[in-house]
Image (cartoon, rainbow, N blue to C red; front, top):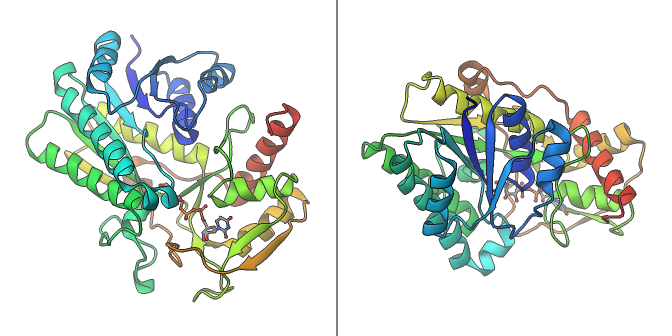
Amino acid sequence: MKKRILVTGGTGFIGSHTSVELIESGYDVVIVDNLSNSKADVIYGIEKITGIRPAFEQVDCTDLPALENVLRKYQPIEGIIHFAASKAVGESVKEPLKYYRNNTVSTINLLELMPQFGIKGFIFSSSCTVYGQPNTENLPVRETSPRQDAESPYGNTKKIDEDIITDFCKSGAPIQAILLRYFNPIGAHPTAIIGELPNGVPANLIPYLTQTAIGIRECLSVFGDDYNTPDGSCIRDYIYIVDLAKAHVAAMERILNGKSDKQVDIFNIGTGTGVSVLELIHTFEKCTGVKLNYKIVGRRAGDIEQVWGNVDKANKILGWHATHTLEDALSSAWKWQQKLRADGVM
Ligand code: WQD
């Protein structure tokens, strides 16, 4: 019998790509999503890619009784991968209580229900945002690098969730958890059947960039070129979404195969390479042949200057590596944007 995995936020960008990789690795997937920031028809995209339609329940993870009903309906469930969260940095500054409630209560509910249904593995979608702005001599950041004060309520909820999971495990809970701290997920599935589809005006760089390239947006604003970096623009670790999705399968398998020697473990999931905004733009132009209309404007509040990850631990212990290049990721993002245009989506 196939092992069943619950994926919260599974119709979202990272959740949908992870669901594809889980199914293709032989797992049975149940998606729970409240559709606050995604569309249910993503499950048909997952089916088109894999030939298998995942079970789907439109449930908000802050609704404990509804969540309990889902776990009861689909038991036995071996593990949970928890993506469901609000994740817009700017919005979290304006609506902190929404973020603290949604992002922490959902985690608490899942943890509370796991022992009752004999669920063993918990993979949490954490973020490099917990590192804040590392001292440049401490780059690339390691899992042992200090967490710093969050730049936003969103980032703070990631730190708080990490602590909630850790303290629950330390209390003797019969579960094992892995926290995956990812950097900047970008790109789309190579089939261009699923990808990143933000609501409204994109806050993140890549969707805004591809929407500019296809003519939806007039011009891409580069938020600052006066940082203390080689070309003055901010540096990030951009990881291809399918590589990131595969890391979740590797983490879950480490727990389910009894290989995890810690009750809670932490892994950086990135490429290990920092890329500046301007380098990324030039790489996009080179690999797509599309000239991008952009201009330099002032810095964006809350932006950190530079962060990228040391990923040796995930390479060695998870046996996972980012295998795609920045060119691969950007080409997939462009192919996805062109598909959205061809399908009349935008
Ligand atoms: C990247 C770089 C901007 C838009 C994101 C999410 C956060 C977390 C980590 C998951 C920055 C610059 C952007 C634009 C620009 N995700 N930029 N013009 O801020 O690193 O964080 O990934 O946990 O939730 O927000 O990503 O794509 O917004 O910005 O110049 O129109 O691109 O200044 O240097 P960020 P981003």
